[in-house]
Every structure is written in structure tokens, then in C-alpha cells.
Amino acid sequence: MLLPYLHKDLIEAGCDEAGRGCLAGAVYAAAVILPADYRNELLNDSKKLTERQRYRLREVIERDALAWALGVVSPEEIDKINILNASFLAMHRAVDQLSIRPQHLLIDGNRFNPYRGIPHTTVIKGDGKYLSIAAASILAKTYRDDYMNCLDKEYPMYDWKGNKGYPTKKHREAIRLYGTTPYHRMTFNLLGDGQLSFDF
Image (cartoon, rainbow, N blue to C red; front, side):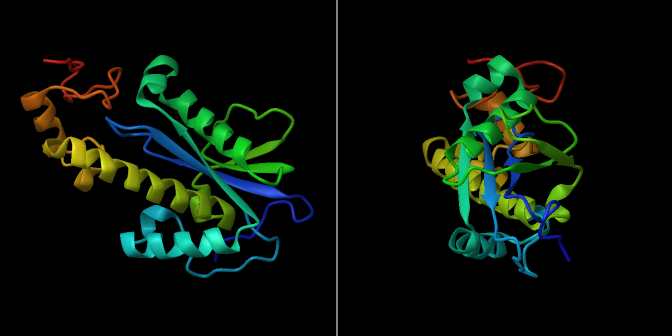
């Protein structure tokens, strides 16, 4: 059973990202504020749920949350500031969009760039420990999946509908055959052989 909060008397927002390990596409983050007494036995780390469960829970989260928001950082920005900082920036952008200002942030992971004026706590594997982080993980994952499904229509040869931009064998083989797209992260090891790819 996931915990509803770390600090009962504070307005807490759970934050998580999706797409950090991908070779292509933006990184997405979500911030979610749930009611302090919130319970949902189905909520869990998005990676432990099926695709159908994630999309069903997205509707529930958006209905039940006091506030929720998304933050996005483009592939170009990722290449400029690196993926770790891009993940933090995506979370900051999500918090920026919240209709309620949180008093505390629960961050999935072990590092974070402090958000101005709001204290935070990092939680390793927090998406499997706190409801608000689990909710954020589901929103970030499903909205990023929607985005990659749209990009797949533009570049179907990379199988982004199937791999969502992650470094699968099929994805890397397509990079070898067709080169890169404007959505690829050029500072990543795209071919998996220690060399960066390039536009052909």
C-alpha cells in the first residue's frame, strides 16, 4: 500500500519524469497534488502497470487530483543542458503550471535541482512508495507515450509506437539505415557502439 503523504500538514506535490533513457523525443514530467486523505489501491509505479491500466488511472488521477500539470523539455534542450538537468527542468516546468502552489515537493529519485521557494525531499523508487509520485509517473508516462505515437506517424521506420524512443535493437538498426531525425538526442550514444550518430 502506497503512502498518501510525507508531511500530513503540508500541500505536497509528487513529481516524476518519463523518457530519460530514450534516444529520441522530449522528456516529460508531471506534478500532482492529491487530497491528503486520498486512497487508491490501484495506483502504483507506472512501470508495474499495463498500458490499459495506466490510461484508465490517468482519467481517475485527473478527476481526483486537487491539481496536476505537465512539463516538457525538448530534444534540443536536452542536448544543451544534459538529460539529468533536463529531467529536473521538466519537473520545474510542471510545478510552474500547477493551479495550487505546493508547500513541499516529493521527487522520485536521489537528486534534484531545488525549486525556488519550495522545499523538497528526494525518494529513491518513490513511484512505488508515495501515491502522488505514482500518479505523476502515470501522467508523465502516458502523455509522453501519446507524443511518441504522434511522432511515429511522421517517422514510422523507427518503430516509436512500439519502443517509445528507447534504445531497442530495431530502433538502433533504423538509425543505421535511415540516419537521425530532428527528434533524436544527438549527444546520446545512438548506435550503441560508443559512437554518436549523424545525419546522412
